Image 1 (cartoon, one colour):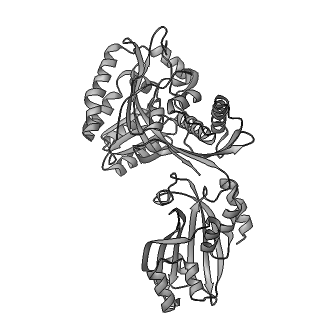
Image 2 (cartoon, rainbow, N blue to C red; image 1 turned 180 degrees about the vertical axis):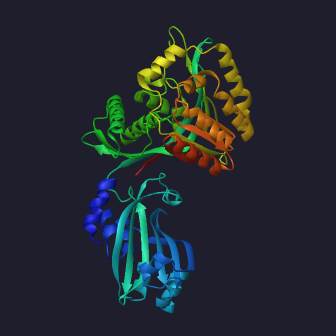
Image 3 (cartoon, one colour; image 1 turned 45 degrees about the vertical axis):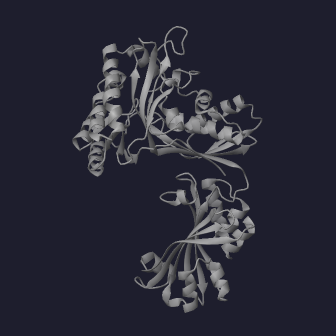
Length: 510
Protein backbone atom coordinates (compact mmCIF):
# COMPACT_ATOMS: atom_id res chain seq x y z
CA UNK A 1 0.00 0.00 0.00
CA UNK A 2 1.16 3.53 -0.81
CA UNK A 3 0.84 4.90 2.73
CA UNK A 4 1.82 8.46 1.71
CA UNK A 5 -1.02 8.61 -0.81
CA UNK A 6 -3.43 7.05 1.67
CA UNK A 7 -2.58 9.67 4.31
CA UNK A 8 -3.04 12.41 1.71
CA UNK A 9 -6.52 11.07 0.94
CA UNK A 10 -7.39 10.90 4.64
CA UNK A 11 -6.39 14.55 5.05
CA UNK A 12 -8.77 15.37 2.21
CA UNK A 13 -11.58 13.83 4.25
CA UNK A 14 -10.91 15.03 7.79
CA UNK A 15 -8.29 17.79 7.63
CA UNK A 16 -4.61 18.02 8.49
CA UNK A 17 -3.02 15.08 10.28
CA UNK A 18 -0.38 15.73 12.91
CA UNK A 19 3.04 14.09 12.54
CA UNK A 20 2.23 11.74 15.41
CA UNK A 21 -1.00 10.63 13.73
CA UNK A 22 0.83 9.96 10.48
CA UNK A 23 3.44 7.90 12.31
CA UNK A 24 0.80 5.85 14.16
CA UNK A 25 -1.00 5.11 10.90
CA UNK A 26 2.11 4.36 8.89
CA UNK A 27 4.54 2.74 11.29
CA UNK A 28 5.88 -0.75 10.70
CA UNK A 29 7.18 -0.88 14.26
CA UNK A 30 5.67 -1.36 17.70
CA UNK A 31 2.65 0.86 18.36
CA UNK A 32 3.00 0.28 22.09
CA UNK A 33 6.51 1.75 22.13
CA UNK A 34 5.36 4.74 20.08
CA UNK A 35 2.50 5.43 22.48
CA UNK A 36 4.82 5.25 25.47
CA UNK A 37 7.21 7.66 23.79
CA UNK A 38 4.40 10.11 22.93
CA UNK A 39 2.65 10.05 26.32
CA UNK A 40 5.70 9.58 28.54
CA UNK A 41 3.76 6.90 30.42
CA UNK A 42 3.55 3.13 30.34
CA UNK A 43 0.84 1.57 28.20
CA UNK A 44 -1.54 -0.88 29.84
CA UNK A 45 -3.87 -3.35 28.11
CA UNK A 46 -7.50 -3.97 28.98
CA UNK A 47 -8.94 -7.05 27.29
CA UNK A 48 -12.58 -6.67 26.19
CA UNK A 49 -12.98 -9.95 24.28
CA UNK A 50 -10.87 -13.09 24.10
CA UNK A 51 -12.08 -16.30 22.45
CA UNK A 52 -11.16 -18.96 19.92
CA UNK A 53 -13.49 -18.79 16.91
CA UNK A 54 -13.76 -20.25 13.44
CA UNK A 55 -12.20 -18.12 10.72
CA UNK A 56 -14.77 -16.44 8.50
CA UNK A 57 -14.05 -15.63 4.84
CA UNK A 58 -12.37 -12.28 5.61
CA UNK A 59 -10.19 -13.71 8.37
CA UNK A 60 -9.22 -16.64 6.15
CA UNK A 61 -8.16 -14.27 3.38
CA UNK A 62 -6.19 -11.97 5.69
CA UNK A 63 -4.43 -14.85 7.46
CA UNK A 64 -3.97 -17.30 4.61
CA UNK A 65 -5.89 -20.08 6.37
CA UNK A 66 -8.93 -22.13 5.44
CA UNK A 67 -12.40 -20.89 6.42
CA UNK A 68 -13.38 -22.60 9.65
CA UNK A 69 -9.81 -22.92 10.97
CA UNK A 70 -9.41 -22.00 14.64
CA UNK A 71 -8.25 -18.42 15.22
CA UNK A 72 -7.79 -16.48 18.41
CA UNK A 73 -10.06 -13.41 18.38
CA UNK A 74 -8.90 -10.67 20.72
CA UNK A 75 -10.25 -7.15 21.35
CA UNK A 76 -8.25 -4.83 23.61
CA UNK A 77 -7.90 -1.22 24.64
CA UNK A 78 -4.43 0.29 24.93
CA UNK A 79 -4.54 2.66 27.90
CA UNK A 80 -2.35 5.38 29.27
CA UNK A 81 -1.43 3.61 32.51
CA UNK A 82 -1.12 6.90 34.39
CA UNK A 83 -4.41 8.53 33.34
CA UNK A 84 -6.56 5.59 32.27
CA UNK A 85 -7.30 7.28 28.94
CA UNK A 86 -8.06 4.89 26.07
CA UNK A 87 -5.43 5.60 23.41
CA UNK A 88 -6.07 2.87 20.84
CA UNK A 89 -8.76 0.26 20.31
CA UNK A 90 -7.44 -2.88 18.63
CA UNK A 91 -8.88 -6.12 17.27
CA UNK A 92 -6.64 -9.04 16.32
CA UNK A 93 -7.01 -12.51 14.86
CA UNK A 94 -4.30 -15.16 15.11
CA UNK A 95 -4.28 -18.72 13.67
CA UNK A 96 -4.00 -21.10 16.61
CA UNK A 97 -2.01 -23.64 14.58
CA UNK A 98 0.82 -21.16 13.95
CA UNK A 99 1.40 -20.30 17.62
CA UNK A 100 4.02 -21.84 19.86
CA UNK A 101 2.46 -22.91 23.18
CA UNK A 102 4.22 -20.22 25.23
CA UNK A 103 3.24 -17.45 22.78
CA UNK A 104 -0.36 -18.71 22.76
CA UNK A 105 -0.49 -18.69 26.56
CA UNK A 106 0.64 -15.06 26.76
CA UNK A 107 -1.72 -13.99 23.99
CA UNK A 108 -4.77 -15.70 25.43
CA UNK A 109 -4.31 -15.25 29.15
CA UNK A 110 -2.45 -12.02 29.88
CA UNK A 111 -3.13 -8.34 29.34
CA UNK A 112 0.12 -7.84 27.43
CA UNK A 113 0.48 -5.74 24.25
CA UNK A 114 1.15 -7.89 21.19
CA UNK A 115 4.36 -5.99 20.44
CA UNK A 116 5.72 -6.88 23.86
CA UNK A 117 4.68 -10.52 23.47
CA UNK A 118 6.59 -10.66 20.19
CA UNK A 119 9.61 -9.04 21.85
CA UNK A 120 9.43 -11.36 24.87
CA UNK A 121 9.53 -14.46 22.67
CA UNK A 122 12.24 -13.08 20.37
CA UNK A 123 10.11 -13.49 17.26
CA UNK A 124 11.55 -12.01 14.06
CA UNK A 125 8.61 -10.42 12.29
CA UNK A 126 7.64 -7.57 9.99
CA UNK A 127 4.45 -5.52 9.71
CA UNK A 128 2.62 -5.28 6.40
CA UNK A 129 0.15 -2.36 6.28
CA UNK A 130 -3.01 -3.17 4.32
CA UNK A 131 -5.32 -0.16 4.67
CA UNK A 132 -5.69 3.18 6.44
CA UNK A 133 -9.03 4.97 6.45
CA UNK A 134 -11.58 7.11 8.26
CA UNK A 135 -14.73 5.72 9.89
CA UNK A 136 -17.43 7.37 12.05
CA UNK A 137 -17.54 6.51 15.76
CA UNK A 138 -20.73 4.49 16.03
CA UNK A 139 -22.04 1.79 18.35
CA UNK A 140 -19.84 1.54 21.42
CA UNK A 141 -16.85 3.29 19.87
CA UNK A 142 -17.71 6.84 20.87
CA UNK A 143 -18.40 5.70 24.43
CA UNK A 144 -15.12 3.79 24.60
CA UNK A 145 -13.13 6.90 23.67
CA UNK A 146 -15.46 9.35 25.51
CA UNK A 147 -16.01 11.33 22.31
CA UNK A 148 -19.09 12.53 20.44
CA UNK A 149 -21.14 10.12 18.37
CA UNK A 150 -19.97 9.96 14.73
CA UNK A 151 -16.71 11.80 15.36
CA UNK A 152 -14.14 10.55 12.82
CA UNK A 153 -11.91 7.67 13.82
CA UNK A 154 -8.59 6.96 12.14
CA UNK A 155 -8.21 3.28 11.43
CA UNK A 156 -5.58 1.00 9.95
CA UNK A 157 -5.29 -2.70 9.22
CA UNK A 158 -2.02 -4.61 9.02
CA UNK A 159 -0.54 -8.08 9.26
CA UNK A 160 2.42 -9.27 11.28
CA UNK A 161 4.41 -11.63 9.06
CA UNK A 162 6.60 -14.35 10.57
CA UNK A 163 8.39 -17.07 8.64
CA UNK A 164 6.79 -15.91 5.41
CA UNK A 165 3.24 -16.40 6.75
CA UNK A 166 0.72 -14.06 8.42
CA UNK A 167 0.99 -14.57 12.16
CA UNK A 168 -1.54 -11.93 13.28
CA UNK A 169 -4.08 -9.67 11.55
CA UNK A 170 -4.72 -6.43 13.46
CA UNK A 171 -7.07 -3.46 13.12
CA UNK A 172 -6.35 -0.38 15.26
CA UNK A 173 -8.49 2.72 15.74
CA UNK A 174 -8.13 6.04 17.52
CA UNK A 175 -10.07 9.35 17.33
CA UNK A 176 -8.98 11.99 14.85
CA UNK A 177 -9.11 14.47 17.73
CA UNK A 178 -6.45 12.46 19.58
CA UNK A 179 -2.73 13.22 19.15
CA UNK A 180 -3.44 16.50 17.33
CA UNK A 181 -1.07 19.39 17.96
CA UNK A 182 -3.81 22.04 17.98
CA UNK A 183 -6.52 22.92 20.49
CA UNK A 184 -10.00 22.02 19.18
CA UNK A 185 -13.61 22.24 20.31
CA UNK A 186 -16.08 19.59 19.16
CA UNK A 187 -19.83 20.11 19.48
CA UNK A 188 -22.60 17.63 18.71
CA UNK A 189 -26.15 18.92 18.91
CA UNK A 190 -29.48 17.11 18.72
CA UNK A 191 -32.33 17.84 16.32
CA UNK A 192 -35.91 18.30 17.46
CA UNK A 193 -39.54 17.70 16.59
CA UNK A 194 -41.61 20.85 16.95
CA UNK A 195 -44.99 19.46 17.94
CA UNK A 196 -46.94 22.73 18.00
CA UNK A 197 -47.05 26.40 18.86
CA UNK A 198 -49.49 26.93 21.73
CA UNK A 199 -50.93 30.44 21.63
CA UNK A 200 -50.99 32.44 18.42
CA UNK A 201 -53.88 34.54 19.73
CA UNK A 202 -52.09 36.68 22.31
CA UNK A 203 -55.18 37.95 24.16
CA UNK A 204 -53.65 37.15 27.56
CA UNK A 205 -50.54 39.20 26.86
CA UNK A 206 -48.31 36.32 25.81
CA UNK A 207 -47.75 34.72 22.42
CA UNK A 208 -46.03 31.70 20.89
CA UNK A 209 -45.26 28.97 23.45
CA UNK A 210 -44.23 25.61 22.12
CA UNK A 211 -44.07 21.85 22.62
CA UNK A 212 -41.18 19.75 21.32
CA UNK A 213 -39.21 16.51 21.51
CA UNK A 214 -35.41 16.36 21.33
CA UNK A 215 -33.97 13.74 18.95
CA UNK A 216 -30.67 11.87 19.09
CA UNK A 217 -30.49 11.68 15.29
CA UNK A 218 -30.18 13.45 12.95
CA UNK A 219 -27.58 15.73 14.49
CA UNK A 220 -25.06 18.47 13.87
CA UNK A 221 -21.42 17.66 14.54
CA UNK A 222 -18.79 20.33 14.05
CA UNK A 223 -15.20 20.94 15.03
CA UNK A 224 -13.57 24.34 15.51
CA UNK A 225 -10.02 25.56 15.99
CA UNK A 226 -8.33 28.93 16.12
CA UNK A 227 -7.29 30.26 12.72
CA UNK A 228 -5.86 33.47 11.22
CA UNK A 229 -8.92 33.72 8.94
CA UNK A 230 -12.54 32.60 9.12
CA UNK A 231 -12.94 29.28 7.28
CA UNK A 232 -15.84 26.84 7.01
CA UNK A 233 -15.36 23.40 5.47
CA UNK A 234 -17.09 20.06 5.09
CA UNK A 235 -20.52 21.24 3.95
CA UNK A 236 -22.45 22.78 1.06
CA UNK A 237 -22.21 26.50 0.29
CA UNK A 238 -25.58 27.31 1.84
CA UNK A 239 -24.73 25.67 5.15
CA UNK A 240 -21.26 27.21 5.08
CA UNK A 241 -22.78 30.68 4.62
CA UNK A 242 -25.00 30.22 7.70
CA UNK A 243 -22.10 28.97 9.84
CA UNK A 244 -19.80 31.72 8.59
CA UNK A 245 -22.33 34.48 9.32
CA UNK A 246 -23.01 33.15 12.80
CA UNK A 247 -19.29 32.80 13.61
CA UNK A 248 -18.66 36.31 12.32
CA UNK A 249 -21.38 37.78 14.55
CA UNK A 250 -20.27 35.83 17.63
CA UNK A 251 -16.59 36.70 17.21
CA UNK A 252 -17.51 40.37 16.85
CA UNK A 253 -19.69 40.25 19.96
CA UNK A 254 -16.90 38.56 21.91
CA UNK A 255 -14.27 40.97 20.58
CA UNK A 256 -12.25 37.82 20.21
CA UNK A 257 -9.24 39.33 18.47
CA UNK A 258 -8.87 36.23 16.32
CA UNK A 259 -10.79 33.94 14.03
CA UNK A 260 -11.80 30.29 13.66
CA UNK A 261 -11.70 27.43 11.22
CA UNK A 262 -14.84 25.29 11.44
CA UNK A 263 -15.31 21.85 9.93
CA UNK A 264 -18.89 20.61 9.73
CA UNK A 265 -18.68 16.84 10.16
CA UNK A 266 -22.40 16.09 10.15
CA UNK A 267 -25.57 18.11 9.53
CA UNK A 268 -29.09 17.69 8.19
CA UNK A 269 -30.99 19.70 5.57
CA UNK A 270 -32.52 23.08 6.33
CA UNK A 271 -36.25 23.84 6.17
CA UNK A 272 -37.33 20.26 6.70
CA UNK A 273 -38.93 20.89 10.10
CA UNK A 274 -36.15 19.56 12.36
CA UNK A 275 -34.39 22.77 13.41
CA UNK A 276 -31.20 22.51 11.36
CA UNK A 277 -30.51 26.26 11.29
CA UNK A 278 -30.88 26.71 15.04
CA UNK A 279 -28.62 23.80 15.87
CA UNK A 280 -25.91 24.87 13.42
CA UNK A 281 -26.01 28.40 14.79
CA UNK A 282 -25.95 27.34 18.45
CA UNK A 283 -23.17 24.80 17.85
CA UNK A 284 -21.11 27.44 16.06
CA UNK A 285 -21.68 29.99 18.79
CA UNK A 286 -20.77 27.55 21.57
CA UNK A 287 -17.61 26.41 19.75
CA UNK A 288 -16.44 30.00 19.24
CA UNK A 289 -17.04 30.85 22.90
CA UNK A 290 -15.18 27.77 24.12
CA UNK A 291 -12.22 28.50 21.84
CA UNK A 292 -11.85 31.99 23.24
CA UNK A 293 -12.45 31.03 26.87
CA UNK A 294 -15.88 32.64 27.26
CA UNK A 295 -18.78 31.02 29.10
CA UNK A 296 -22.24 32.18 28.07
CA UNK A 297 -25.72 30.77 28.63
CA UNK A 298 -27.54 29.13 25.75
CA UNK A 299 -30.01 32.01 25.89
CA UNK A 300 -27.17 34.46 25.27
CA UNK A 301 -25.79 32.25 22.49
CA UNK A 302 -29.22 32.16 20.86
CA UNK A 303 -29.53 35.94 20.95
CA UNK A 304 -26.11 36.36 19.35
CA UNK A 305 -27.05 33.78 16.74
CA UNK A 306 -30.48 35.31 16.11
CA UNK A 307 -32.46 32.26 17.26
CA UNK A 308 -35.34 31.53 19.64
CA UNK A 309 -37.43 34.60 18.80
CA UNK A 310 -40.63 32.57 18.43
CA UNK A 311 -40.11 28.97 19.50
CA UNK A 312 -37.79 28.07 22.35
CA UNK A 313 -37.77 24.36 21.58
CA UNK A 314 -34.52 24.46 19.59
CA UNK A 315 -32.59 26.33 22.28
CA UNK A 316 -34.06 24.17 25.07
CA UNK A 317 -33.18 21.02 23.13
CA UNK A 318 -29.60 22.28 22.83
CA UNK A 319 -29.53 23.04 26.53
CA UNK A 320 -31.54 20.28 28.18
CA UNK A 321 -32.91 17.69 25.75
CA UNK A 322 -36.03 15.67 26.52
CA UNK A 323 -39.68 16.65 26.13
CA UNK A 324 -40.06 20.41 26.42
CA UNK A 325 -42.80 23.00 26.86
CA UNK A 326 -41.86 26.68 26.65
CA UNK A 327 -43.86 29.71 27.79
CA UNK A 328 -43.62 32.07 24.82
CA UNK A 329 -43.06 35.83 24.95
CA UNK A 330 -44.70 38.93 26.35
CA UNK A 331 -46.98 40.35 23.67
CA UNK A 332 -48.40 43.77 22.98
CA UNK A 333 -47.32 47.44 22.82
CA UNK A 334 -43.99 47.98 24.55
CA UNK A 335 -43.42 44.23 24.98
CA UNK A 336 -40.89 41.84 23.47
CA UNK A 337 -43.19 41.08 20.57
CA UNK A 338 -45.78 43.37 19.06
CA UNK A 339 -46.83 41.19 16.14
CA UNK A 340 -47.11 37.59 15.01
CA UNK A 341 -43.88 36.45 13.37
CA UNK A 342 -41.64 33.37 13.04
CA UNK A 343 -38.20 33.17 14.63
CA UNK A 344 -36.53 34.26 11.38
CA UNK A 345 -38.34 37.62 11.66
CA UNK A 346 -37.93 37.98 15.44
CA UNK A 347 -34.29 38.98 15.71
CA UNK A 348 -33.15 40.23 19.08
CA UNK A 349 -36.02 38.58 20.96
CA UNK A 350 -34.76 36.38 23.77
CA UNK A 351 -35.63 32.68 23.82
CA UNK A 352 -38.74 31.98 25.92
CA UNK A 353 -38.64 30.40 29.38
CA UNK A 354 -38.84 26.62 29.69
CA UNK A 355 -41.96 25.80 31.70
CA UNK A 356 -41.54 22.04 31.77
CA UNK A 357 -38.86 19.58 30.78
CA UNK A 358 -39.33 15.83 31.22
CA UNK A 359 -37.45 12.75 30.07
CA UNK A 360 -39.09 11.24 27.00
CA UNK A 361 -39.60 7.46 27.36
CA UNK A 362 -36.57 5.74 25.81
CA UNK A 363 -38.56 2.71 24.70
CA UNK A 364 -40.83 4.84 22.50
CA UNK A 365 -39.41 4.79 19.00
CA UNK A 366 -39.75 7.70 16.59
CA UNK A 367 -39.96 7.42 12.81
CA UNK A 368 -39.11 10.47 10.71
CA UNK A 369 -40.51 10.43 7.18
CA UNK A 370 -39.57 13.24 4.79
CA UNK A 371 -41.25 13.31 1.37
CA UNK A 372 -39.19 14.49 -1.59
CA UNK A 373 -41.13 17.75 -1.72
CA UNK A 374 -39.97 21.37 -1.85
CA UNK A 375 -38.58 22.80 1.38
CA UNK A 376 -40.98 23.65 4.15
CA UNK A 377 -42.34 27.17 4.29
CA UNK A 378 -39.71 29.71 5.32
CA UNK A 379 -38.53 33.28 4.82
CA UNK A 380 -40.93 35.87 3.43
CA UNK A 381 -43.64 33.31 2.73
CA UNK A 382 -43.60 32.14 6.35
CA UNK A 383 -43.85 35.72 7.59
CA UNK A 384 -46.83 36.36 5.31
CA UNK A 385 -48.64 33.28 6.68
CA UNK A 386 -48.11 34.40 10.27
CA UNK A 387 -49.50 37.86 9.49
CA UNK A 388 -52.46 36.57 7.47
CA UNK A 389 -53.55 33.70 9.70
CA UNK A 390 -53.05 35.16 13.16
CA UNK A 391 -54.56 35.72 15.61
CA UNK A 392 -55.81 32.16 15.82
CA UNK A 393 -59.35 31.93 17.26
CA UNK A 394 -59.23 31.98 21.04
CA UNK A 395 -61.45 28.91 21.38
CA UNK A 396 -58.95 26.81 19.40
CA UNK A 397 -56.09 28.05 21.57
CA UNK A 398 -58.04 27.09 24.69
CA UNK A 399 -58.78 23.63 23.30
CA UNK A 400 -55.14 23.15 22.30
CA UNK A 401 -53.80 24.23 25.70
CA UNK A 402 -56.33 21.95 27.40
CA UNK A 403 -55.14 19.09 25.17
CA UNK A 404 -51.49 19.66 26.05
CA UNK A 405 -52.02 20.26 29.77
CA UNK A 406 -54.51 17.50 30.54
CA UNK A 407 -53.63 14.77 28.05
CA UNK A 408 -50.17 15.17 26.53
CA UNK A 409 -48.27 16.10 29.69
CA UNK A 410 -49.85 13.41 31.90
CA UNK A 411 -49.17 10.80 29.20
CA UNK A 412 -45.46 11.68 29.28
CA UNK A 413 -45.34 11.56 33.08
CA UNK A 414 -47.19 8.23 33.18
CA UNK A 415 -45.53 6.80 30.03
CA UNK A 416 -48.94 6.20 28.48
CA UNK A 417 -48.17 5.77 24.78
CA UNK A 418 -51.77 5.39 23.63
CA UNK A 419 -52.81 8.60 25.35
CA UNK A 420 -49.78 10.44 23.99
CA UNK A 421 -50.46 9.25 20.44
CA UNK A 422 -54.12 10.28 20.70
CA UNK A 423 -53.00 13.73 21.80
CA UNK A 424 -50.51 14.07 18.93
CA UNK A 425 -53.24 13.14 16.46
CA UNK A 426 -55.68 15.63 17.96
CA UNK A 427 -53.16 18.48 17.86
CA UNK A 428 -52.86 18.22 14.07
CA UNK A 429 -56.32 19.79 13.70
CA UNK A 430 -55.92 22.55 16.27
CA UNK A 431 -54.48 26.05 16.40
CA UNK A 432 -51.50 27.04 14.32
CA UNK A 433 -50.64 23.41 13.55
CA UNK A 434 -53.89 23.16 11.58
CA UNK A 435 -52.78 26.22 9.63
CA UNK A 436 -49.31 24.75 8.95
CA UNK A 437 -50.88 21.56 7.63
CA UNK A 438 -53.31 23.49 5.44
CA UNK A 439 -50.39 24.80 3.37
CA UNK A 440 -49.04 21.31 2.65
CA UNK A 441 -49.65 19.38 -0.57
CA UNK A 442 -52.11 16.49 -0.34
CA UNK A 443 -49.24 13.97 -0.10
CA UNK A 444 -48.47 15.10 3.46
CA UNK A 445 -51.84 14.32 5.11
CA UNK A 446 -51.89 11.13 3.04
CA UNK A 447 -48.60 10.03 4.60
CA UNK A 448 -49.90 10.86 8.09
CA UNK A 449 -52.90 8.59 7.57
CA UNK A 450 -50.68 5.85 6.11
CA UNK A 451 -48.46 5.77 9.22
CA UNK A 452 -51.44 5.76 11.58
CA UNK A 453 -53.10 2.96 9.64
CA UNK A 454 -49.84 0.94 9.82
CA UNK A 455 -49.93 1.02 13.62
CA UNK A 456 -48.45 4.32 14.83
CA UNK A 457 -49.86 5.40 18.18
CA UNK A 458 -49.66 8.96 16.89
CA UNK A 459 -48.36 10.83 13.87
CA UNK A 460 -47.86 14.51 13.20
CA UNK A 461 -45.92 17.12 11.25
CA UNK A 462 -42.88 18.80 12.75
CA UNK A 463 -42.94 22.58 12.49
CA UNK A 464 -43.84 23.66 8.91
CA UNK A 465 -42.76 20.29 7.52
CA UNK A 466 -42.44 18.52 5.27
CA UNK A 467 -40.96 16.03 7.79
CA UNK A 468 -43.57 13.93 9.54
CA UNK A 469 -43.11 11.79 12.62
CA UNK A 470 -44.74 8.64 13.95
CA UNK A 471 -44.38 7.27 17.48
CA UNK A 472 -44.82 3.72 18.76
CA UNK A 473 -43.07 1.16 20.95
CA UNK A 474 -43.41 -1.97 18.79
CA UNK A 475 -44.06 -2.63 15.13
CA UNK A 476 -41.93 0.24 13.87
CA UNK A 477 -40.65 -1.88 10.98
CA UNK A 478 -44.20 -2.23 9.65
CA UNK A 479 -44.79 1.51 9.94
CA UNK A 480 -41.51 2.30 8.21
CA UNK A 481 -42.26 -0.12 5.37
CA UNK A 482 -45.69 1.43 4.88
CA UNK A 483 -44.16 4.92 4.86
CA UNK A 484 -41.46 3.90 2.38
CA UNK A 485 -44.03 2.33 0.07
CA UNK A 486 -46.14 5.48 0.16
CA UNK A 487 -43.11 7.70 -0.43
CA UNK A 488 -42.14 5.62 -3.43
CA UNK A 489 -45.63 6.09 -4.89
CA UNK A 490 -45.48 9.90 -4.54
CA UNK A 491 -41.99 10.41 -5.93
CA UNK A 492 -39.58 9.41 -3.18
CA UNK A 493 -38.35 10.54 0.19
CA UNK A 494 -36.40 9.33 3.19
CA UNK A 495 -37.15 7.59 6.49
CA UNK A 496 -35.15 7.35 9.71
CA UNK A 497 -35.95 5.47 12.90
CA UNK A 498 -34.52 7.34 15.85
CA UNK A 499 -35.11 7.93 19.53
CA UNK A 500 -35.46 10.85 21.87
CA UNK A 501 -32.40 12.40 23.49
CA UNK A 502 -32.80 13.28 27.14
CA UNK A 503 -29.72 15.47 27.34
CA UNK A 504 -28.57 18.52 25.43
CA UNK A 505 -25.59 19.19 23.20
CA UNK A 506 -22.30 17.43 23.86
CA UNK A 507 -19.30 19.77 23.99
CA UNK A 508 -15.77 18.43 24.10
CA UNK A 509 -12.38 20.14 24.18
CA UNK A 510 -9.58 18.15 22.55
